[in-house]
Image (cartoon, rainbow, N blue to C red; front, side):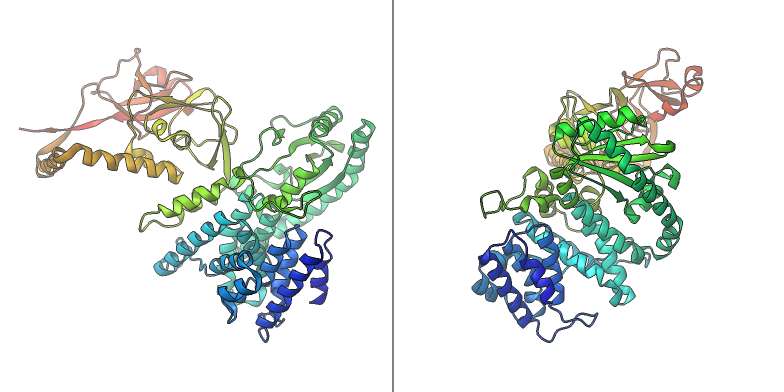
Length: 585
């Protein structure tokens, strides 16, 4: 125990006052946990010490380290919030209280194979998740302490029973690892997923590791032999190398990539990536040019995350090259600051500023904007709504898409042009008439890709479709669409209610007929931009199909029109006539 404490106190950034605070917090915590033991049999104090050590390695301030040492005292001892506030002040007491609220989360997966989720557990989890996000929005250090706490608990998961192992591992994989990713903490995200992998998917993990371990070793050995040759190319060109090392892809990340893209190991080029750390941004681009001069790059696999950072703030240049003896290798080129952020994310902002012993208590607003958005969303969550929307919107992989003017919108993977429109403005979403992606018209349920340029075509009237709710991904879009339809009902007054009642009483006397030259339903959607083809002049008496033109919307043809049969079938869409109710006599 003393060794861990000495390691924490040995950080050069701490002054005598900092060290005194940390020592006092450690002694206070040790006394409070006296007689308590971990499931491993170790004294309980070893856990808060390991959590504190983890964050001290990331450069967190003495106040946060003291809170780490005390983080379980309110939950697991007789001490109260008032006791901590009296002894250590409001700030430390707030942080400990925030972590205590997070510890009350009991995760239950609604899609669990048991067939029926425990409704009370799910409600409790949702309430705890709200508390977690609210605490994060007030001070991001709360979640940093909780992530460090979860990391050490995952290291000692083997001492628990199988039920608890699975529950904690699943919660780690579905909640905490994605939060680490959103905070830019790439290394921690990968570590948490890899530690959870064998407990959540034991069979798949065992088979996967056996399949890839030799490949990892072979690629790693190749990178080690090749690195000096690439380093010589760069130094000969006058480029200073701050550091150069390799990074093996995390097991679970590789497993996901292979499953998602159905690729074999031979098609995964970043199994082990070479990282080149240079002094400044100018050197990044110069290094890329020198490397491409000596080694041929693979087309389409050069990514500039410096000019266009990922939604979580990640920056780097990526290129994949035909290296020595024709082997394909991925290189990542970045500055030391970029590398620090790529590894530790938002925690990297907590370094002491030069010539000062004060820290910035608030993280970059843009980097935690999603926390504020999630807080707002949780406040507005309707009774009975579960975690699915939250998990889709905030805990899944993210993409960024651009307006024609270059503004970036951060969206969940699988988002559509309708989601994009509502992300810009509610009125634009309501009035969306069509959409172009990379200058080509696409259907409304088109799934946007990372880097897409999206242009929304606005109609004269606000006319959202209820069908959009079937495919939009973001909670914001769903909420705005529902709100629009809800607002229309009271506006229609008694006439609408009377009309609904008449429709119900006459339902049995009605039959379905087609509108004369009415609006076509394309791919199950209303409101898409369309025109009727002159070659076959379809009418309501014809079965119809749509053809997606490059820039003039969907062309509606008779189903057996030769111009449709003899064209690219990938651009042919299903279509039918909109129906209306007409009373028979």
